[in-house]
Length: 235
Image 1 (cartoon, rainbow, N blue to C red):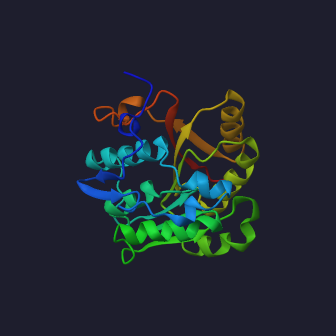
Image 2 (cartoon, rainbow, N blue to C red):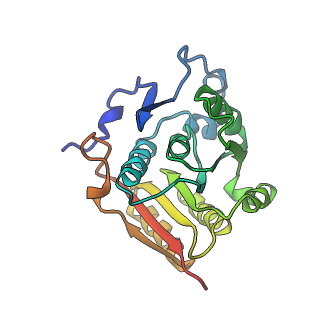
Image 3 (cartoon, rainbow, N blue to C red):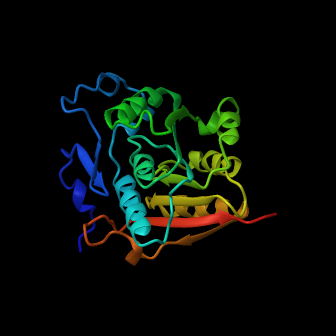
């Protein structure tokens, strides 16, 4: 096996399937002026289809097919969603409410993706969440809970975002109830240790999902990408 997510060896892919339902990633004409003309780093980051988002989505599909996870009737929130593939996957898998969050400047594009895929009437919403300035956004999101699942795929690429991310996860979670599913791409040992040490200090009991639980047959895996699952313990 090679160290790559086979699906994205060709970056031209514009669609993706979950339970035989197509998720469109880009409009057919690729006329995405918001991203083409914007120099904001958050916008450019959100425009990429990250391997971890596909790996997490296919993991969710496989787990639900094998009755190891159940999204039917559940409330799901995704952090740093970008192209929002795990969120749309959650809706396909039966979630009753899906809230997709990212930086405020990214929300118009997420709304386009929701509309492109016909989810605007499926209890799928896009809402802003700036991890470093949460007070303007977090109360609304907390009120929409309690959340059954918090999803995050490859959301840490710089160390200074780790504490704000964990703060956001903490504030949105309900101890012994909310399950965190984090698909993490390892870039440096320092960042990895900082992320998981911070979660542990906050009372999160996190376990790495066995590689055998991933969708290996279809090539949705990568050597430096792992999925972590856990809940915060009651204080």
